[in-house]
Amino acid sequence: MRSLIFVLGLLLLVACGSPGASAEPTPTPAPVRAIANQGAYAALVDEVFSMNLLLEFSRLDAFERDAVEAVELTPASPLVEIVNAQTFSQAIGGLRSRRNLTLDVRALAPGEHTFTGMQIRTSTRSYEVPVGELRVAILTGQTPGFFTVFQTRGVFEEPQPLVTTLVNPTRTTYQFRGIIPPNPALSYGPEDLKQLAADGTATPVPREGLILEPGARIEIRIDWTLDMPDDQGRSVELRPLALLEGPDGPVYIPMANLVFRNAQAVRRL
Image (tube, rainbow, N blue to C red; front, side, top):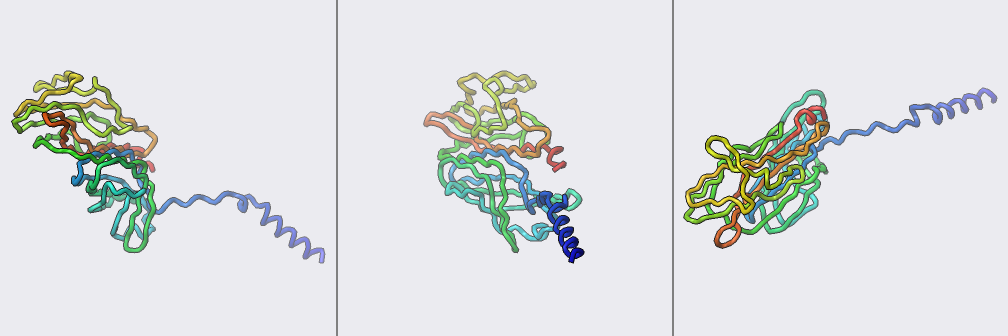
């Protein structure tokens, strides 16, 4: 009897006093997650623009094999709708893999909204994925027939200024006021907006803006500061509109997306 009591006591001691039994369980990484985003997008009603995200996931999860069937941004908003979603795989070794996710988004109604998550539905399951902040500003307005020649567009690993050329093919004079919307990760002041001469000389744009006469072709540069911590994987995206003032009020020129990613930190994730 004493032996039985001793054995039971020993078992109870092992179960309750073992360091392994009291340790916190190791958190299991989410099967799919998005690299944190700081995105700001401006568009006119009925315009289609893109959002560019980077997903990381376990190669052991079904997401590795399944096709993405639908994506919804959350919290939901009547201002926009996703009309297309494309993914491009990017192997990184080990048990993790990545996909670039491009969303084509149609602007439906004027207003502002911030998305902080998305729901991805595949052929076998759904995933709730936090995305950071994706801010959209939808406007009503006109485009005057202007176009821009982009020197800066695409995805960049290092900070660099925005350089573009404004071309006025119309018979009307317009005044360039700046670009919208602001992105909290990209800061600049009036002194950072410059006009570039043919020889590369840069002069600050007057506070009242640039005058673009009919047929004018003016190259501008914005020397902004990018807030991108070295030790954090982060994606900063801007889809701007150029704001012009015309004889009948403000008009807008759609511009190309720019994406800045802290590539070294992202690779370490």
